[in-house]
Image 1 (tube, rainbow, N blue to C red):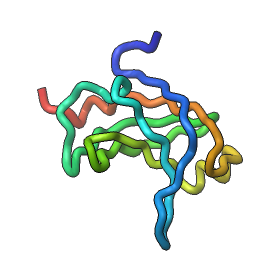
Image 2 (image 1 turned 90 degrees about the horizontal axis):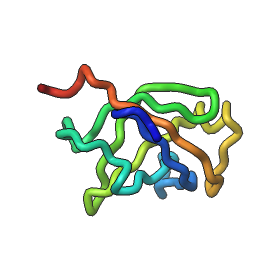
Image 3 (image 1 turned 90 degrees about the vertical axis):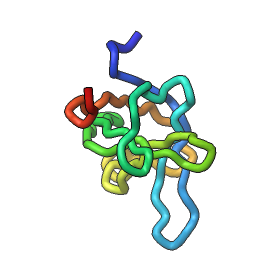
Image 4 (image 1 turned 30 degrees about the vertical axis):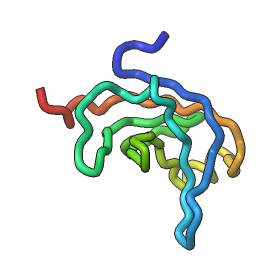
Length: 99
């Protein structure tokens, strides 16, 4: 069990189509933090994949489903490829949320 505000999901690395394609992992409904999102429906988080940690946000897509973008540099460092199953750990960046 994760401490409050800490989450872990396992999913496949997917890619958005287009000329500036970038990769992401979908976040299941039960793993979306219950906080009021910021701009563009984003939820600021600190993410760890393998031995790499960085700050980003969970972003809402159509249908209010969330995803976490995986940086190209992380994919390279962690030897990730599209379709690979990976574990993404993330925690809320509490300073961003109003009381």
